Length: 169
Image (cartoon, one colour):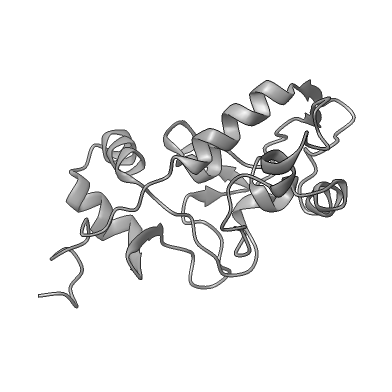
């Protein structure tokens, strides 16, 4: 999991002029699981993510939240493995809930912090083997923009935890 995600979902390059990646970028998910591991961080959930996970696990939304999520400020994040900070759904370097994964995961690596510059893309490639992978296909500028817009459409789920956590009465 990454704990340093840019608050601006659309890189400055997109807002002010033609972005540096207008010819597209090479990416292919290899399923290595590295984006689900590492230092402490947050995998933010919105209402759609919670609904999708609840359906996937055949739970009510409240049951899903109690079992797999935690409140962080006004947001909701997936819990982490307390021993290694891995995503709780990562088992043997594979996502056990891939079909239901949240928007944050679905839009990786198309996050603002990775698209700010060629240097930031190269830095991201050091922890993600799918970036510039030899078998990666070219992802078009248009598809990258769609992913950026998807990511920026995230909405907080304020109040979704009310009364769900044991410490809240």
